[in-house]
Image (tube, rainbow, N blue to C red; front, top):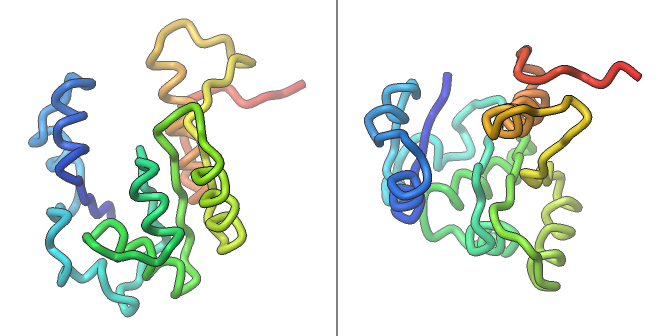
Length: 156
């Protein structure tokens, strides 16, 4: 099952940077929550799941998770994932990175978080921006052992 939480900032970014509507994204999920629904089941350590991805992850959200600051459903679910030993994948959005952000990444990595920057790869010879996006999405899916054919794997 796919549970989706979209922050207010992400809603603005979706409108400005993608061709997708909120309805498109919500309909792709099994269940949708607003970031203020702090009592949702995903906010509980007793909620069983295979893991969580924050994509894209702002440096603000990354810093909050690194500090254990749970001011919304995204950060609460992420901190619960950490405390319960579940997989957490964070895909940072910003570049370049300042020292505070790098230190937060190290802190999260030491806590077991998979830091997966959305860096393009070129060994598979992407022809369109969609090929670059698919490579990052494929790398995220790989973290959960979800099979896909979004990019050609390196074969030497």
